[in-house]
Image (cartoon, rainbow over the protein chains, first blue to last red):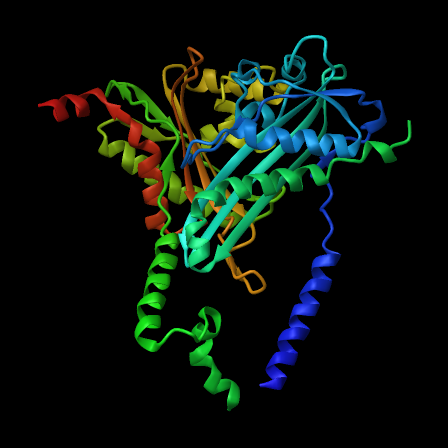
Length: 197
Length: 241
């Protein structure tokens, strides 16, 4: 009995130590010319919903844009959030996969230079003995002046809770996973405070 | 010997030993049933718009594009060409069978025609070439579109891309008791284009969650769901009668 308690404590301690060692993965793409200090004010467009399998109706802007605002503030970027969903009409998965320079120039309001698009690629929740949530989010930062992609990062949010309590939380899981993925996604955006002008 | 005795009790270790056996059995059964129900993957289609085609429309099925990607970074993963080709051939045969069952006039693209299209230098293969909506494409794609117009002046091209997203599977986290779903999924996308007139006649996307199953039965389900919104006019007339 004592040995079981000791081994459980050891496993727990090891887990906590490993948790502390977890670092954010680097961005999936970062252009060599990307200088965060040059980005004086970026425009954040409404969240694109590119899910094939849409289980429920979610107000993505209300859920994700506050995270974007919080993270951009923390990282030292000036920003303007566009909430007019007409500004993202017609942006398809294929446009973002391999963006042409002409297309980049059409993004966001005229007269702006740095444009960020946030895309929900997939999300779901399911009931097990507990419940689980899953979401995939991708962020892009474009420079309309040079017509280039500066930064791209995709993150996966996997959340869950076991037991009967977890089963009761099923309705919250998808949103929780989306928020987790969004927060992880911004972790790979360079800190503007540490960027040399 | 001690560990051997502990094994049958492992489920109770997870769910706790407070419940008497008469209560724990139904709870465990329920948990098992719920877990299994979560494992059943059913393809889900994006669009519900139905497309009717005249049986006389000549359709050429191109080689399906097969891609394996990392779900966490979207990076393309390398798979042996032989495996990819085998999978493409299976999906191609399933597409042909399903379209024939709808009474449509079609054929597979001949190897010589595929060779003449010179798709090997285009990432995304035929599907990338057939995405007519996309403007400002690379010169290689523009050239391939021109070759396709020359080769198939009166035919419509069916282009399909299957992306197998690989990533962390389902797991149980002992510290929180949390269960995580598998992140793996399959995304199949189809386009039917009239290349001569530069028109997209039909498009669909289908997703299969929690799975990258490449068994023929799973692929058949996926292909059937993908092509569910295409009909021949003769088939629809038959339905009405």
